[in-house]
Image (cartoon, rainbow, N blue to C red; front, side, top):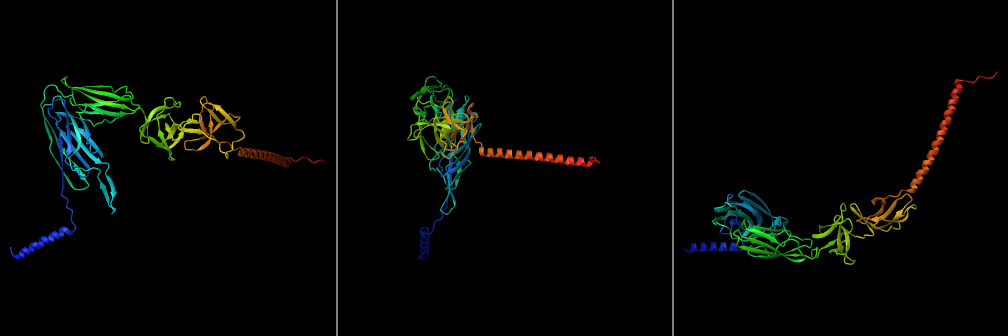
Length: 482
C-alpha cells in the first residue's frame, strides 16, 4: 500500500474514533430472547405418584404481562390435581384454565406504575425484573393407577411477553420425559404440600422439613389441616387439631406409605393467642380521636339483645357485638382517658358513642342518647317533668294529661330533638309540639266566621220573608173598606 493509501486509512479510522467519542450515540436494541421450559426433578415414578412440573422462564426483563402459556401432558398417564403461581411473581394476577391434558396460564403485573416523565409523556414502570430463571407457575400431576411406560410434559404455546425496556421474542425450551417404571407398593411417606386454613406456617413448606409453627386467634378452637400426599395410596392421620388450648398446641400429621412400613410425622406447633385483638389494633373517629381495641374482661356483661361476631374494622379482624336492625356495632375500646367500655361505632358516619346503659336507647337502626334540654328550647306548659321505669332503665322526660311521654334525645350524629316514647310498646318517633297560639287563633277565627254566617243566615231569612210578603200583597191585594 502506498503512503497516500496508508494516510487515507489512518484518517478514516481517526474520523470513526472521533464520531464514536463525541457524537451522540444511537441506541439500537437487539431482540431479547426468553426461553420457556418445563422442568421436573423426580425419579422412580410409579402409579399414584404426584409429579411436580414447574414452568420456568430463563429471564424476565421488566415483563408486565405474559401468556397464555400452555403446558401439555399425556392425559392417559396423569390428571392435574392442583396449580400454583410462581412465588416470585407476587405482584402478578394470574388466570388459569384446565382441560384434559393441558393447563393454560396468563399473568398481568398489577403493581406496574403508570406515570409521566419530565416531558409529560406517559411511562410505565414494572415492579419485577430478573435476569435469572423465574418459575412462572407449578402444576401438580397425579399419575393414574394404570400409568405405565413414560409420561411427557411439554410447552405447546408461549403467548407474548410484554416488556417495557426492550423488545422480546419468546421460544419454547425443553420439556419433560420421565419413565414410569416402579412396580409394587410405594415406599414414599412424604407429602407435597401442607397448609393450615386461615394461617401461614413457618418455615416455608419443604417435604424434608418435619416441624412448623403458626399462630391463630383466641376465638379459634379448631384448625383445618390440608395435605397433598406424594403417593395416592399413602395413609394420612391428623391428630391434635381440635379443642385447642391457649398457647402451644402440637398438631401431628402422620403419613404411612403404601408399603405399610415407611412413616413420617410432620408436627405443627399451633399457637393460640390469649388475646382476640391483633397487636396495636386501633380506631379513629371522624374528629380524629383515637381508640384502642381491648379484650372484654370476663366480669363485663354484654348488653341485652347483642350477639358476638367478628368484624373487619379499620383493617383489623376484631370481636364485635351486633343487634338485628341496628346499623352501629358495639366495640370494647379504650379512649386513653376514661376506663375501657363499650362504644357504638357507625362505619358510615365514622362516629363513636360511648354506651351508657342508664342513658342510651337502642332503637331500630339508630342509637339515641338522653340529653339536656337547651335553655332556648321552651317546653309547653301542659308537659311536666316525669320519670318512667322501663324495667331495665329509668327514663327522665316529660308527660301531659293526655298520656303523652316525650324525651329529649341525641342521635349518633349529634342531632338533638324531642321524641315520643310509647309507654305501651316502647317504640320511639320524633315528636312535634302543637302550636297552641295558632290553634287559639284558628278557634277564634272559626267562632267569628260562625257568628258572621249565622247573622248572614238570619238576614237572608228576613229578606226572603219580606220579598215573599211583598209578592203576596201584589198578587192578592186586600179589599178596601168603604
